[in-house]
Amino acid sequence: MPARGAVNRSTLRQQIADALRDEVLAGRLQPRVEFTVKQIAEQYGVSATPVREALFDLSAQGLLESDQHRGFRVREFTVADYRSMVDARALVIDAVFRGIFDGTGAVHGLLVTHQAALVSVRRRAEEAARAARGGDLDILIGYDLRFWRELGAVVGNPYLTDFLHRLRVQAWVFAVPYLRGDADVRDWLWNGHPELVEAIAAADGDAVRTVLDAYHAHGLSWADRLAADDPPHPGHHEG
Image (cartoon, rainbow, N blue to C red; front, side, top):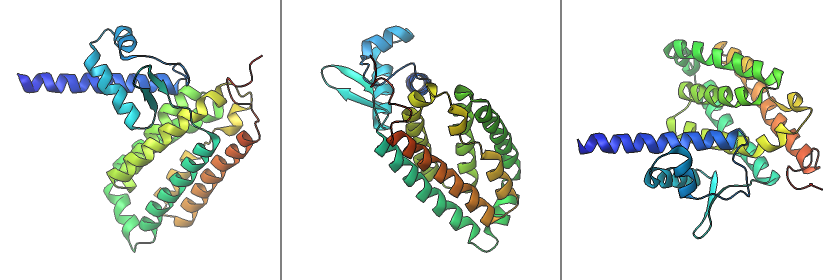
């Protein structure tokens, strides 16, 4: 019986962390707005302990900042932070795919082993691209994160997959406030997911690198635009 209670508490802790992460990604929980364990516990109708654990988990993931006396707030990333995320992501992804496609016969064995998984990844890719073309940010974020996590499970190791997932969540946390107020949002939502899947399925290393280079360039181009304050930083130009 004690073990069952521990599992339930751990599950509640994860559920709260997931719910709060969704609130941040949706832009409903914004930087500079402070909140306490007590407020979140009352909001979800649960005890303080799993809430406190969930908040510390999100802090460890770099999404929240804490103040011993004032509570928690969503971390506010800078354009320089975002550019570093894009560069780090590109370095790791390039190393992963280079290791696969430069290995003799490695990619063919991978494709045979994970053929069924690639079917699911392809579906995620199509949904993510459709949402990006339509400018549907909420749908895109969910499918984009699932797409990369499932693809990572196919082509990478779990440690790299977790690291890249954390980077992507942080990048979305940074991007959401800008994108929600941008009339040109569809121009800045990458939609190359299907092209990447098809290049992998065709075992075409050059095509994979071309898509990934475009993905990286897209992120840096958007960072350049933000550095020029176009669009202006959300919340910094009122009045």
